[in-house]
Amino acid sequence: MKLDALGDWVRTAYSMNVTPEMDGQEITLMGWVQEIRDLGGIRFVILQDREGTIQITIPKKKVSLEVLSKSDTLQKRFSIGVKGTVKKTNMTPRGIEVMPNEIKIFSTATEQLPIDITGKTPALIEARLDARALDLCQEQNLAVFKIQHHALAAIRDFLFEKGFLEIHTPRIIASATEGGAALFTMDYFGEKAFLAQSPQLYKEQLVMSLEKVFEVGPFFRAEASHTRRHLSEFVSVDIEQAFTDAKGVMELLEHTIQHACKVVNEKCSNELALLKHKVEVPTLPFKQLTYDEVLRDLKKKGVEVPWGEDIPTEAFRVLGKRYPHFYFITDWPTHSKAFYIKPREDKPELCEGFDLMWRWIELVSGGTRIADKALLVNRLKEQGLNPEAFKYHLQAFDYGMPPHAGWAIGLERLTMILTGKKNIREVTLYPRDRSRLTP
RNA sequence: GCCCAGGUAGUAUAGUCCGGUCUAGUAUAAGCGGCUGUCGCCCGCUAGACCCGGGUUCAAAUCCCGGCCUGGGCGCCA
Image 1: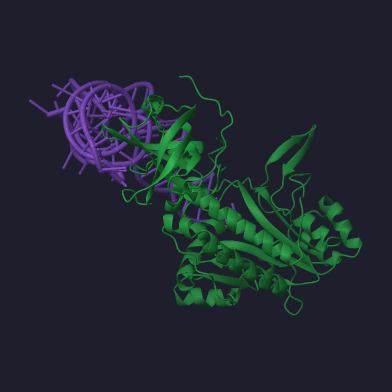
Image 2 (image 1 turned 90 degrees about the horizontal axis):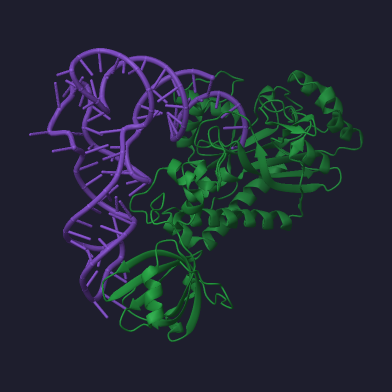
């Protein structure tokens, strides 16, 4: 098929911008054929663009031969441009249709698409991810990523407003940062290197100079997790702040989350309606439970967790039913948290680390960090880590490390909460997990 | 890494327990034809599938074994 060049055509409106008041105006639309309904003497082509859909109406005896023959060849997913006249009508749900004067076909598509994009026979997640570029054209998916965009924009705006500077730390690192999680290894000009699991150590070092920093970026965990809430590559929204403690950054966090919910509610009402999901703007302050209180709560529900143990998922599910919104868990046993989390001065077996939960899902973790070098070295040893491997990080503590604290939000998990999606892969453009490296 | 479930047209499913009119059903998508107000359009026709390998049996989509792949759960965590 001979394709048309874009030429001097410029889009004058997105589908959603067209209103009945524009009756009689000529507009230029760009997009894709979503659906064709041919009734014989009249043909309806649904044009889709990023913002929505609009009906192109083709009464076969009234349009030019050129428009008719172009529209004869159209198929689903063809990329097209339409110059046409807006017509006010009571025969479409939106009260408008477009009578085409000229149609350009920019590109074609295969006859049989790998997934159903009309939603009549929804494909399973595997087939959808295999054809992700096409899958993302579906309105539901557009809605998910618009919500993610607005949530992240709201968080950025909020942090800028609070005086945070946006930073970029290395993804390629020389040694394991936190011990715990497995890292991906890579070859770095013949040396062994790792993909960063978090910006933790770098953002801590930066509070010595930039004081209040945040970073949004991908991090990597080589854990062979196989759940609906884990990825090998995920986006973390990290902050670190000098001259404050857990209490300070918890307050910042709850305001950040509240702001994001509020903005999403305001800006994404159409998207939320499409997803049949409601976002409640949470009231402040968030509920705070100590680790000990959580254990007591669980015991009442018949779930025994020995003191000092991590809380298993099953127990979190029980807890999530009792607290079906956002809540903090504080005062964790020191040994259960990373080496850089500060132990409480009055009770060193507990620490100033916290998690922010949404129902049963861990959304954020954070805490007061250790600013004292000797204590940090001790904690490294207690966790079975070699201080020598951290010498470049530890040297920062010789030059005036201020008291500081921070947290990290899992952006995909936040998006799950804001969209009601139950699988983290749905809210990730191109998810990476134990068994998926493509597309 | 461990545990469970499952692989049937492009997609989603029925059939599998209890082997045999299964020549594998349905929906949707696709192709062709018809229809001037559809909006999950409608109607007719056409084409399209039992994950791979081995075994049991007169006979395997169905039972057994191995493999591969997928989904879910646990652990780990954002």
